[in-house]
Each structure stands twice: as C-alpha cells, then as structure tokens.
Image 1 (cartoon, one colour):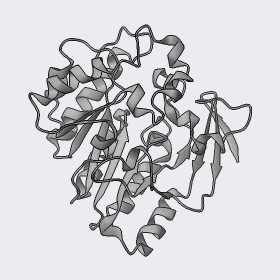
Image 2 (image 1 turned 90 degrees about the vertical axis):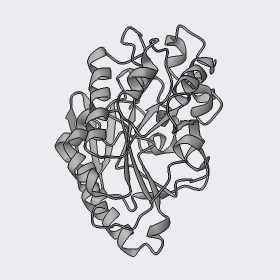
Image 3 (image 1 turned 135 degrees about the vertical axis):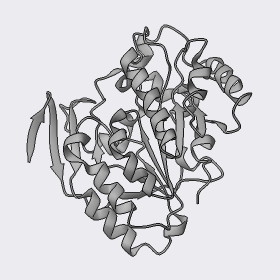
Length: 286
C-alpha cells in the first residue's frame, strides 16, 4: 500500500524482524557495545532538511536495498508497521534480555514528523515498559516530539534519551534554524527535570558559538558525546566526502580541532564527556 504525505512517498511493509544484531561497526566500538539496533523504517522524514545533506544512513543497506531507483534520500519512507508486535515477540522469547543493549535508531529518527501520526515509537516504548530486565535502551533523536513520551520513557528503568544538537548557531547554510536549536535545548532541560537520563550528542560537531559549551552544560544532561564527520561516519570521512554536505561546507570539515576544542571545554566542567563511537557505546547499563 502507498500513499503520499507532504510530497514524500509512504509505503508500509510487514517486516520479519525488528531487532538487528550488532557485531561490528560504530555501535560496538566502546567498552559497552550495543547488542542490537531498532529501526521501524527505512528512510527518514528529515532527509530533505539540513541534516539530510550529511546523514550517513542514506549510504547504508537499510536504505539502499529498500528504496526504489527513482527515490532519493528524503523522498520515501518504508514503514515496518508491525514493529511493536515484532518487538514484543522477540523480547518475549529472548533468553539474554539482561545483556541486551539497544540503540533506537542509528538509521532513521524515531521522532521524525510522521511519528506523531503513527505512534510507532510510543508503541515500541510501551512494549519495553513491560520488561524491566534489559541493560540499556538509547532513544536517539533530534525531534522535540519526544516530549510527548517523557512519562513513558521515565517508566523504563534502563532507558536513556539521546538528543542530537550539532551546534547552537543558526546562521549556517548547512545547519539548523534558531527555533530548531532552541526547541532541542529546551527539550533536554525538560527531560532532565523530569528525571529522564539524558545524553546530548554533538554529532557531527558543526561550527558553534563561543558560548555553546555553556549552553550544553546548562541543560542538565548527564552525558555529552562529541563526534566529527571524519571519525563518526564510519569510513574516515569517505561517506561524508561523497555526500551533498561536502559541496556545501565553507570550512574544512575533516579538521577535528573544532570538535576537540569543545570536548576539552566540556571535559573541564563535566565528568561525563565522551568521544565518538566509544562514547556512544560507553553508557553504563543497569
């Protein structure tokens, strides 16, 4: 079945599995690697926004083998509509739930715009809330719609909320708008006040204002991870070099010194600042 939504092609599919084992790559690079990822779609509703220009997910098999030849990144969304039911079935039969560390999601945002209509992320969270014995669930997003689910996230004892905030500047031709930045900072503050364990991902780190470190610290986030294009795209910058962003950037995006300065500034004030893959895969579980 297909229908169109805001000029995006929407297709629904019945998937066979929803938890993807992780045996190598970015999510296994740290001392506490993720065992699984969870993505209820291929493609992303943010694909035509600024982040779509550098998103490495458009080059991964999840999208490459699901899309049609005439579909570019941000033009189609293939939704696994039975994701919550699959998750329930897989968790119910899992013998190693205490070891499970799940990243939701490395290839599509769980709070992209259509989530407010479908509520697939919320329905998956409702499944997780039935189980209290997993080690970790990281819900990674740049969407402030996650505020709808703070009550539910707070009820899951192993859940962390990850909010992507690449910069606080809004004058960049390849960066977020001012309202977008402010919404995300405010969302982290609200989540932290509600007792939700929260991590900010400056990923990838874009040029930022002199006060960026202070603004991040003021949110109350428990962890902050800094990442760069060259380190974080999984190919030492090759994927980024082949992305639309490489032609837009007006600075040397391969130079990690911008990110390293922020890492040092934050590290002098915060005891849980981490770097790239080992940082993402470094969260203490239950």
